[in-house]
Image (cartoon, rainbow, N blue to C red; front, side):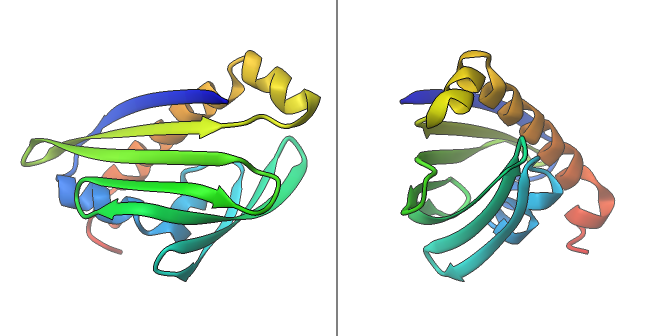
Length: 144
């Protein structure tokens, strides 16, 4: 099992950061390789991804959700073996810290090699930077 943990400060209030993160359907706007996320019910999402030409579909169950504080999830069924936790920290009235931790099990030669080369770590860093750009854009913060 491998683990990645990265944080980023965003120039939005904590409530805005948390609320946007829980709009799972918007993940394709800032997560590379995520083609679609569909909310099945209050605790289950369905994902379609394409990474390095490999398409996968899987479900993720939300195992813990504390508003304005944290969301944890784990994959159920399918080939992907991932678990994650995102936490939100209040820095001041217009700034928050978002920390993302992923635990994952690479499958097959390509994923194992990619893990050793830091592919997932770089992806997480890039996705958090994209989230920052996305959430700080005027259209998103205003709820458009």
